[in-house]
Image 1 (cartoon, rainbow, N blue to C red):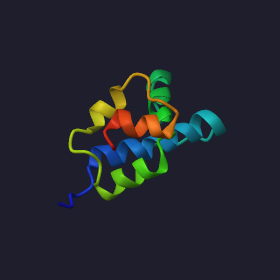
Image 2: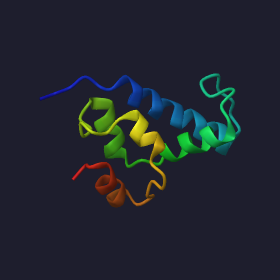
Image 3: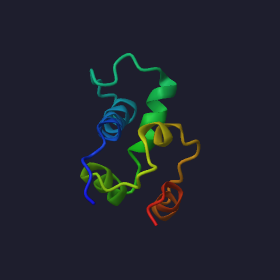
Image 4: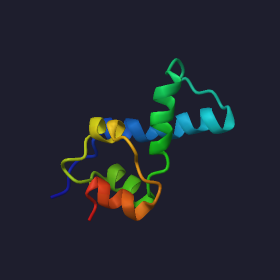
Amino acid sequence: MKRDPDPVLLRLITHAFAAQNHIVLGASSPMVAGYSDRHLHQLTRLSYLAPDIISAIVDGNQPAHLTGRKLLRMGALPLCWAEQRAALGFG
């Protein structure tokens, strides 16, 4: 069954790329202005999710157990896309 995209997950992904631009390129964004360095780094690592994981989140096809809280609080998100899929329950 198709679900609507989770607005919390969508916001996290959007903020992740804004945080990455802020940290890597020095491009300020009102979207992440005022965030602590720790939070910016937590968000930035989400910008390195596998493209198919990001697409699934945008389409609302992520596993039901994957919440914004779980994604943001996940300690060591693997950089390897296959390991990300396994850790996040994408089969």
